Image (cartoon, rainbow, N blue to C red):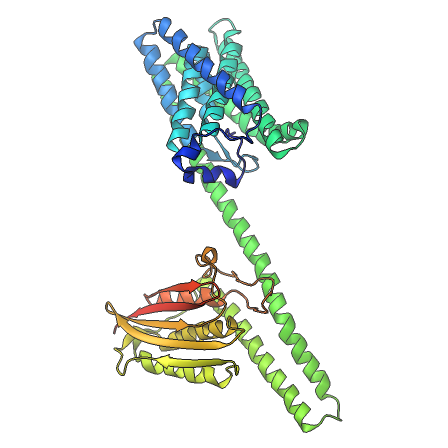
Length: 478
């Protein structure tokens, strides 16, 4: 498990803290954090004195440094193990416990404390987390060294027993102190937190205890032979990362599937209900001509809406699977934009106006004309949808750096700054709860981005909330 008493997202924000704030001890830090930090620092100082006063030989110094380096690497690149509550599991304790069995508690404490300190300083953690995590590892290393020292003898059985006892002691101190801090921070019962932590980490601990025993036995034969353990450890780490990435991808696909079903079901329900209601009304023979035409208009409008929804789903599927053909050819951007603007004026609400602004001559572009129309139509529809209070929509053309730039501007709701990076994601909607009555599948902008990129262009947005948006895309000249 990784140390630290700032759970979840709060941990990732520590790198962005100002330098002064990082070196302040937080008032809300758990009570146990300070004594653990102080005790760890004191034990590290004692370990340094004991190690130096013991007149270690060159092999012992080199071996301790090698195990320290291995611990730093393992702590810096934790392995994601499925089902572990901490998310990623550090394999550093393999080398720390190995140092405790091979060289004693001073070497283990030095490797543990310095290893964690190097990684935490590299991550620019705040003082409270740096002090607690280094203290935690220092205490666990001392406990591991004491347990290993209790085993006498250097035969195979004694080495294995020392490795197991050292691993158990390290794990017990680590999991207990971490659970204490998590319990205090989350205000949950300590016994519940401890039980859950042990349940989620017992299998990784068993694996690491076994690897520690292998390391100790190999090191006893030859430190050079023990280096052979590096290969399997790297292979395990890479494999776990690959499995974890695949599982995360499957979860994301499952989330997208659920979101797709929810969004499409919601979007289909309204037009289907409108068409059904209008058709039931038309069955009445007593309808006058005005109401009859009104019902037919509802059926036509909602049927067109259904067609657009289905078309978006079909296009998203084509883009996702790669079953799409782009026919690139020289075409006139001014004519394409004029066609889209003229078509948009037919059904434009009375509170909106649309205008095309383009130079008298615009260079030809190399693109698929139907897909350019589709992108422009989607952007214009988007501008209409997000202008519920009316206003002006501008479609502009200009030449810039060997490309033709299309721009669709509105005076509508605008896009919050924290949403602008996600608006081209599949199924992402700015108004998912329909608080402003703005619906949609969340596929329109995703389709626009994919089509523009297929035509070797790029698309972006410039927007301010409550002041409108400008969607811009560029395509290469013919």
